[in-house]
Image 1 (tube, rainbow, N blue to C red):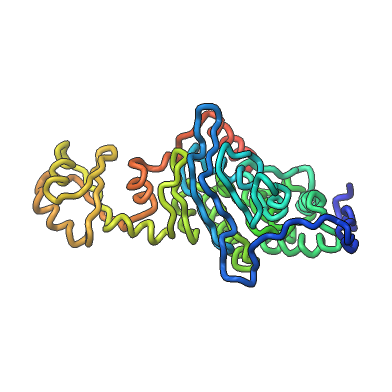
Image 2 (image 1 turned 60 degrees about the vertical axis):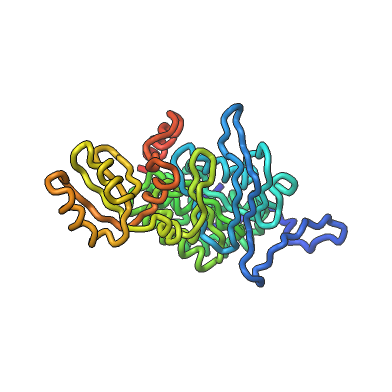
Length: 358
């Protein structure tokens, strides 16, 4: 296969006029001309692996055009849910509908309607960027006349147009991730699934990836469904589902989720009895994390002088912070997000990703 400009040929059946006796595909129920509707609907979804319940009776709706985030630690059920929605896993029970098609009864129609960026890198680094896109185009029967324009379009969107003839093995980790996103958009999916899209990337590259994801949502109107355990990434989403141990704990916008905290977060450190005394004196819920005592209080900055006066000599340090999604997760689950936890397979996968993206 030559590595430079050529006429990319794919199966031409889609270039021909459709036959009148060809069986028509079921039509999706949504229309871009209507007001936003639920492009993803999940009802009582369960997935078990033996005695382990990875997805535990979840309910979920995602509107067309939204950027929707699945926030949770390793092992929470995020990737398992995406695999079910992408028809890569069969659910044990429940119903899932994507772009108007049931994942069990119309899996092929679902696959034509979605793009998927896997957690693990899946490019062929022996091929160029354009050749990786061409292979994807063949899988989707994309006509060669359409491929050239779309390939240039998606590569331009992720700032890789000038590298379309470069071997992928010469790309950085961030460039590979951007190419995977471009590939997922090539066939114009209604929904783009991003499974931990920035795992193993440095903060600067993660910010660049999110810049491109926001642009594609604005330019193409694509619905984005992404998983992450990075709190700062979840802030980019229109709505977030907080998931832990296979159960959805809450679904709302980042602002509304943080509003449920009910005040500023105050973090103090001091003697052993400090937590119990604060709880009794101010009638607040406290959480002991390491040597620190965490609690919420309205107008936290104004409350601090009173706290210092009441507990004179007992406080070693004090901080006041606005509520964060970390606080939300802590409130909903009773523990902080387990970024560092996971099976040995999870840890091995992340180490491999870091090595490949050097």
